[in-house]
Length: 164
Image (cartoon, rainbow, N blue to C red; front, side):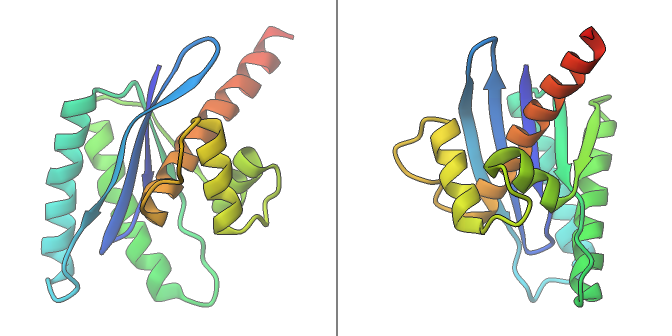
């Protein structure tokens, strides 16, 4: 099973691709799609959409996991993340890929065993679970990998429940 994890953003959109077999998960690729802040949001979203479509075509994931925007005091930021999330959902569903969405606290809970984990703790757990020598070079890429790992863990739980 190949999972594409996406950490949405209109300036930096992280992506992580992992493969899962019966005994392990393996990093395929990860990175960040960057857009200049002085570009109008419509053009950034269009560019991100095209780049995401290329990633989906290149890696042929079976499922896509996307982080939900977290609304705190910064509604403007949450709206931007929501827009990026929408184009990620569109890119996946146009290719008939199932899409799963996870709140940041759920991702942290599944990856680091605590919903209030710091970014550094999550990054270290991503490194350990993917058996990497170092953490991914970008926070956004590490977050996308964490989202993909969260999805795999959620699938395992769902399968266990279905079997019982």
